[in-house]
Image (cartoon, rainbow over the protein chains, first blue to last red):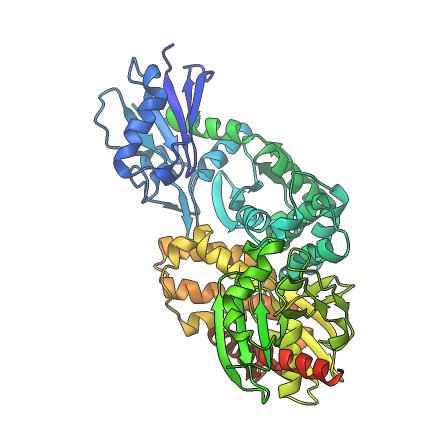
Length: 299
Length: 299
């Protein structure tokens, strides 16, 4: 198997790679937990070689995105400033390597000066979404640990805003006093819907509503599945309240993991917004492919 | 030293005890980290004996409050339901003991049916505050891991509301992505004040403003002390936005740790409210003393 190029999505926790054919087909894929977070600077090249060594016979170009390009990553790919296109092949940064079979380009993230905001990795998904939806004008929502709302116009990222919703859900459900009342993976749609509506109508009540999950568990028999769904609904509803200018009356497309995107789609549906949905990996690969083809074309 | 009785504040993380004289003076005090959270049911008596064994010559009465009376504690002291006085000696529960020198009474917490809410330990501080401020009518605010706002009228707790502000600050500053930008214990009053005002005027923006702390640290040189103070200001300001019916135009008294109470006092001062402040331990001891004296009087 001789890939034309190799796509790499290298985040804080995971490293994923795809051997790509010249026609855009995925020939093979591989993944490891060698995320940026656990590697020192000289650990990146060995980690990549462990994963993709067998694919390197013809020294194909590697195009990578994500936290691998942060200041704590393999080598820094300085943020580009919005408004701008999500990706620019000219801004790719070559990682320093010792193995002659490796040519590694890293895509930079985006920053917004005011209000201050940053992204790394999502810009590639955004570029991929614009490739999959040519001429797209509207809003992209990328739910996740740090959810992003992105305003797209004329192929550029005009503005974006990040919410810590996913990280707050993880901390609250696993590390706070609320964890006692939400064991398991159960779910309750009605509880989710009510919580989204509550949060949207009185978003400032979040701090008080969170503790009520604990209190109702103790004295009113709140079930773990209802508590879990309500926590999610409260946090997503609070996000939607703040992100209203992004979705109200806009065309919205969700890019994210299946279950989480479904929850966002449901919450938006309650507000009369019917978002389109794209698969994260499809978007990442389409974004990296656009970088590869533009780089090849420039040769 | 022969105490007339022994006061015990037994929370999730800590156990504190005071040997009390008949005149109300503190003869000795002791503390350990044998909190409720790390004890199984049969571990409570030995933990207490380790701490207060030397004080037990005349088998003085022990009056305890806090999580020791929860379902996972030494023995459950069922919640009393508001509106009611903060403490009632009739509702004290005797803990089962094997050592004949021990007589241990545990004070129950309070619950509110709708909206569901609970407290354990704070009811004793509240009773103490009402002893220190006879005839108090108004609002008590008890900042902490789970801050409580309490409406007091005619010596009774009329209603209360709990906010997870302290726990959110701990999780966000120590366990979330924000921890990278707020190392140390530095502080910046101006950043705190601005954040309180921001949060009070647009409380629904909390989720977005949190991530801006990270982004400004990365691209705009936000200092750790400003980031730390702003996180605190955002969370306290969001709490004040939701608790407005409790403090607007009310007499407010703060019961809490020195630094945290000072932050709440400052935030309330920005809104034109000048709260009185009481020391937590003073309130706890006054509350336990009121239980002891009423129990003695009933003999």
